Image 1: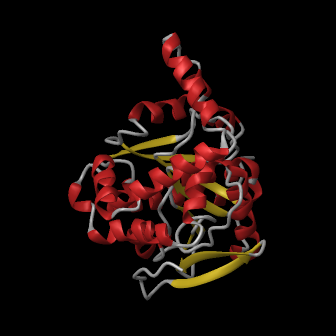
Image 2: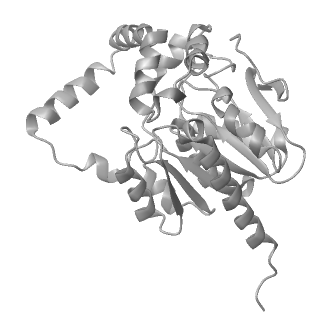
Length: 304
């Protein structure tokens, strides 16, 4: 398994889920439960700047999605449904209480699916530069030549040998410390936040058994539900903490979230794709204040 530096105050544990080993960390003994979900290629380590502070007032949990971090990387089909089921069972078996769930990027999409499909286990949802497409994204008219190239590419990527070749090439391109650093520098606004430790946290799990299969699964994953469909069915409070310098999930995308979830709270963070890591002091304070507001509303007696 991946050997990374760990914070000694955290409870590090493994949980056997459907026969697969899943890693999680926990800190804090009182207060509401918060569950933190990392993005693609990341792990529970990506929340190390948040867990210690939040655990002063909350019971904080972070879990490695199956296929990432210190969790097992079996050769299976990866999908949002798989991770949703993992999160639901984690809440039922390990936390044993509803949670405020927060997710970044791919982890945001998994958290959104969980919150929509498992409202009984969700107190509130926090999305940090959430990944995923809106229906309107696929309806943008492009030139015919671009549509043709796109269709050919999709057809090729359905062929198993093409998937294997392409994924092997891309996987080995990204399994390099310098390449990882270059990618992070493109999506972090503050270059000083791209530390050697951060690079190592992403680099080391790429050498675990099955890591290539997980990477290849990106090309095989069936399309998930569109964000607008999910948001229309969301029954829990939503907080958007959005890095406004993210070149991937731009401020325009955050505004799309508000369009389909007008009751959501949007707070901008002066950061890139991973605001919780780049500006943890801002994210921790905003998350704390929002949860306290939700808790106060829950404790208020109903109006006669």
